[in-house]
Length: 374
Image (cartoon, rainbow, N blue to C red; front, top):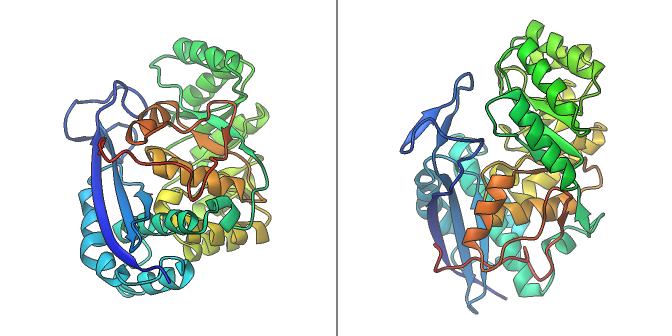
C-alpha cells in the first residue's frame, strides 16, 4: 500500500508580458479595476502543491489563488499536510471526507480553506493516476470526448473597433465562440456585443456582478434578441433570489458558479432555479467536488461550463480532464493569455487553442511541472 511521504507548497507569482484581462492599472501590488470590485494582480499568482508517495512518485495540484497564494499555502502546510502524511493517497474520497471535516464549524468548505483543499485534491488525483498508470479522465469513469470544446474568454482591447478586429483575428484562427468581459452599462454592453458579433463569432457576456435586477433584465433581453450564448455573473454573487428572478425573466442561460465552491452551495442555487449554466472552477472545488456538482447540475437538467481564469498548467490540465469526463458539458473557458503563461511552469506546454483542448495523454493529469521553473 502506498503512503504519502511529503506535502510541499509552492506559491507562484509569475510576470508575463500581458496581464490577465489586459493592461493592469499599476505594475506592482494589487488593484481594483472599476466598475468591477475584486482585487487583481499585475502578475499571474497561484499555489502549486506537490504530494509525494514513499516510492518517490509525485502528484501535483493547484489552487485558483489569483491574489495572496501564501494564504492557502499556510492552510495546506499547517492544517492539511500533517493529516495527509502516512495516508494511502489512492483513497481519495475518504481523504476528501476527512480533510473537509477538519475545520467543520469554521468555514470548512468555502474561501481560502476550500482553495487549499482543491489543490490537495487535484494532487491526490494526479498522484493516484501516476501510481496506477491511468489518466484522471479514466479514473473518473472515462472520457465522453477526446477534444474539449472551448470559447475564447476576453477581448482585452479598450475600444469596440479594436475588440471587433481582435474577434475577426480569432475567427480566422478557427474560434467559434467568444466571451466579453463587460459591465460598463446596458447600452454600452449591447453596443460592444453588436460590434463583436459582426465577426461571425457566437458571443457571451460576463457582467462581473455589477448590475441590479432591472438593469440585468434589460441586458438579458437585449442579448437574447441578439442570440447571445449566455449572460454570466450579472448580479451580486450573494443574491440568489435576484438571480432566480432573472432566470425566470430572461430568454438565455444565466451563468453562475465561479464563486461557489461546494455541492451544498450549488444545490441551493440549482434548487431555487437561480442558475441556467453552472460554472464551477476546479481550482476552487477540486476534482472530487466538481464531479459531485456536475451530477447535481445534471439532475436539474443544467449544463456545466467549467470556469478557468488565472490557473496555470496544473489547474488547466485538471479542468480539461474533468470537462472530458462530464456528460453534461457545454464548453470550457479558454483564456489565451493565461494559457501562454500556464506552460511556463511545465516541462512542455499543454496542447490546445481556440479550436479546443485535446485530453492530455499519459498517467494522472498528463503534465509535468518543471521544478527549475518554480
